[in-house]
Each structure stands twice: as structure tokens, then as C-alpha cells.
Amino acid sequence: MATTIRVTAADGSLYHVAARWLGDATQWWRIARLNGLDDPDLSGLAAPVPLVLPPADATLGSGVPGVAA
Image (cartoon, rainbow, N blue to C red; front, side, top):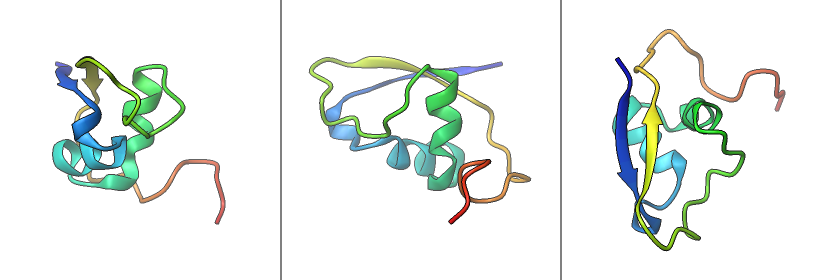
């Protein structure tokens, strides 16, 4: 079952949200993809916005899939 939270600019970024809720800041892209976002920055939010969170997945490696360093 998906979890929905409400975020504001005070939450900083999807990096912070992923670290708190998924245990891995580098999985911010999973939250972004699930919610149709492409920018991890939340500073422009004027009001709370709902975000659907994917389940935590410790089997995923760090980083964004398909993007090489």
C-alpha cells in the first residue's frame, strides 16, 4: 500500500524526504517519478503538497538509473 505524506518548502528537497522515509537520499528519483516531478527542490512550494511515497527498497543501489557519473 502506498503512503501519502504532505510536504512543504520546509522539507527542503526530495533528497531529505527520501532520506527520512526511504532511508536513502539517493532514491529521491523514485518519489519524483511516482509523482510526476523532475526537480528535487521543494523550496518553491507555498502550500503543503501531497506526495505518494514508494515502498522502501533496500535492494536498489545508489544513484539514478541510467545516469553514469
